[in-house]
Amino acid sequence: MFGGVIMPEKSIKLLATGGTIAAAGEDGLAPALGASDLLSYLPGLEQLCHVDAQDILALDSSNIQPEEWRVIAHAAYNALQDHDGVVITHGTDTLAYTAAMLSFMLRGLQKPVILTGSQLPIAHLAGDGRGNLADAFTTALTGQPGVYVVFNHKIMLGTRATKLRAISFDAFESVNRPLAGVLDARGAHWVNPQPITGETALQSDLNDAVCLIKLIPGTRPALLDGLGDLGYRGVVIEAFGVGGLHHLRRNLTDSLGVLRDRGIAVVVTTQCLYDSTDLSLYAVGKQLGDRGVIPAHDMTTEAAVTKLMWVLGQTEDIETVAARMQQDYCGEIGHDNT
Ligand code: ASP
Image 1: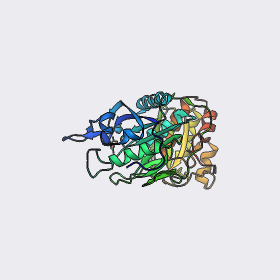
Image 2: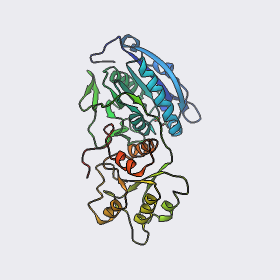
Image 3: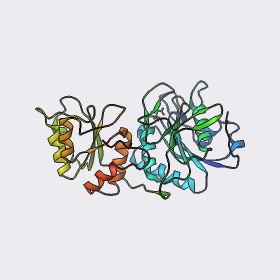
Image 4: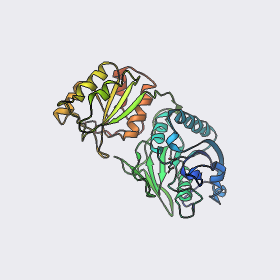
């Protein structure tokens, strides 16, 4: 089951958080298995590495929120002190958000942190749970440092993975970046790993007063106007195409400019899954840039939202927030800063 060049003396910690991979139940699936139960489905793993198991959460990932991201980040950081890598099992629904947030919180990693889950419970004979978990260990045992998502034999950078399919075993894609690696009968092969820079550190402060709004033609400005009074400090707008929005009759540009003038960070991303914002291309976008709105460039929505929370956890100075949102920390933003 486990191919490739692996050093048996390594030790990996499995952190279980719940999700379908750990699910059972007659009346709707709910997390039931802990980390040790999951390991019992991988006979032979103990001959390849020493594994410690820890249950940190037992949640459907729909219930994993900023508080849980901090719990997971602290557990992973602590586990890395005396292990060669960490595998985290997690529900697939919000796994991309957790992977992105861990990528920001776990600075300068020298070891791997691998997230995985599955579309069917691990006990399901024809499911993807055992394979994905085995792949996650195989990937962790390579020692390649960084936060990655492993799913359906694909290795994706934590800030680039997005759940695209609700049922298919091939649930995740790496958006705006080639796969970091793949798994086959010979083990894990890295083709595009992310270089690590800086000192290892846990930087888990965040500000969860961030929301995401997807525009439709005709979105009313009042929706945006109320955000400041609701206590939000940042908003990510999923706009049209490269970052357009309407100002005729319903002037969203003005509303976003007013939010920005009130000190609320406004980040504009695109509803298109692939490619980048470009506020300089159309007049409707250019007005936004002139009002101090921050382009998300080619970040995924998950990366833009979690990064904004993380950056606002460090500073609320709006110019610094704008600069940091456009700085690449861990492969989340391309160098095509149009
Ligand atoms: N609802 C589940 C979860 O995200 C789905 C899954 O794990 O596939 O926890």
